[in-house]
Image (cartoon, rainbow, N blue to C red; front, side, top):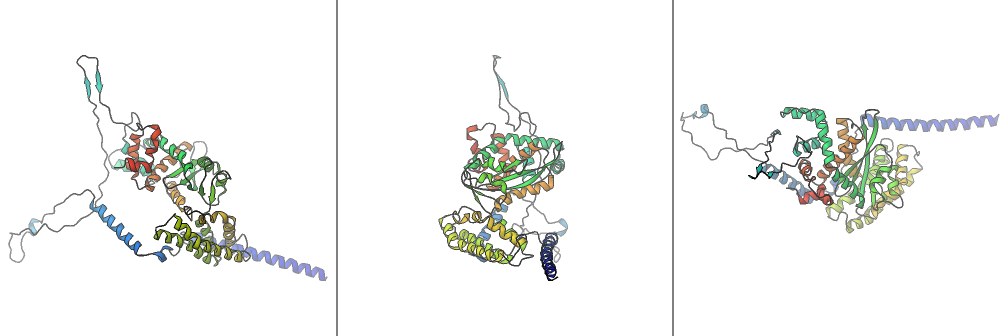
Length: 476
């Protein structure tokens, strides 16, 4: 009888423990769902930089204001004279109408927007003939982006910039052109978009070929729906970032074959999140994998609703960024002094993080949000520590995440790509446009120039048309 009672008590304790764990897990899930539904979507917390703001930041702000004023002053200017109305040209006190002009008058300025205009250009090619009747010569005509095409490079560049930079779907461009006085069908705009991609494809292919030569590459990926004629599917756009350009690559799947193919067994550093698709490119013969502290931080940010202990980890991670801002302020960023700062300050911070998490690990279930955050840190500890041995390795992968933001915005507006070929063209044009913005180049000016230049430019010197090199050689 006593044995039966003890068995019942053991079963009771086991059930009670199981239900407590279930209750705790459901409470955590409920808190996370409430945060997602009603809480702030941003992960922003008190700025790290506020603590390092100095007189140099104030000087930079003043410099930015001065630059904006200078830009306004250098705009094309027109002068508009406003005359005093005839009924006001009489003094209400003495009744005199002999009013004299006082100085130049009251002067004020406004910045006005002049809508874009379309122009129909007629090209006349001079033709000369010899009196003997055996020789006729005709002047060369304009170089067209597409042979026999009716639209100029500026028109085609505007379509690409509107879609890839301003995220406008083609039907909105159709409305804009109609307001400007020209009705162009959506199918024509689509054809011009893909014709442009085909013309500049050699430049994009050169970017692909040169990417493995960069020591530091950041990578990330995002879905892109493909509305094919037979069956819709989900493709992926991958972003690969280096110091000179941003490269996008489309693939039908999220397989690790894409980063492996793009990086092509090259040596160096690949900074990415913990997604296993990058493992193939980071084999023993390939690149070394570096981890992202922003992803690690996100895990603890999501756990702070149910585990207040997350706040201490978030503060310690913020201290890592404090060291980075200090290096920027001292103007030693990515140099030997920066590495020394990381070894003297950042190394002790991550030691504190590790020690604290070891203490907390046994107090939280592995499947709880805080437990998962701890697991992420320890499973990727070696990758997250890479920045301590190379000052050129950033703390996070945010640059490639920002590069994918334009894909996400575009996806919300135009919804999908028509097929795999269209998605590849889209990735190529996105690459050129994003690289122009990275190098502070007007993308419309760049594309209008290379659409003509690429036809006559020597193939062996195609590197000169890459955005960062074009800027030095051809930008006006």
